[in-house]
Image (tube, rainbow, N blue to C red; front, side, top):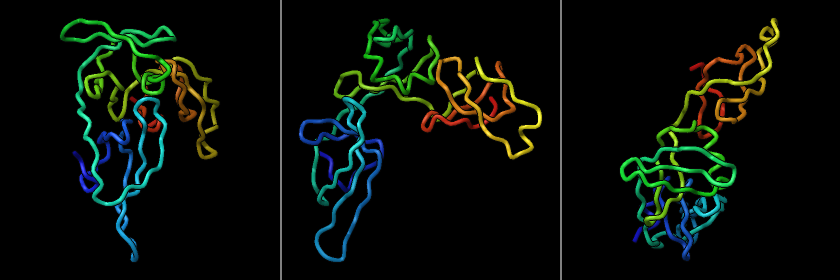
Length: 186
């Protein structure tokens, strides 16, 4: 069992039979009444984020999580296909559930898969990735004088991010996987 005073961002808990990941939490001690914990929880099954408040000291079933190395093979639009690097078993997961994080992963790349209670649930990405720009409009000379600006660029994974005007097709960029924003040249 896990208590509200043991919460950490990223922990998984079971609330009324549904598994949630703790996105953020805040202990609140009002001047009148009992203390409580205000949380933002992401439902593991579909990724929806909800706000929930618990009484201080409330207990929940801790969820067993495990990380395995898998190789992302390809996506056919319906499913994303992976291979276990130890047993060479292939498994697939619905692409719609993993569409956001897979936007930063090239095919045949090793990733970390999160298993919750023995079931494949999600993939964990590094904080940033380095990808090549495959398509963007050329920057117009003199545009940067007016304080810069951004333009859309399609990365080699198919994901679109906003990049500064001076970057062109073929340039390599570093992208933050949490926010999907351009960080620097790769």
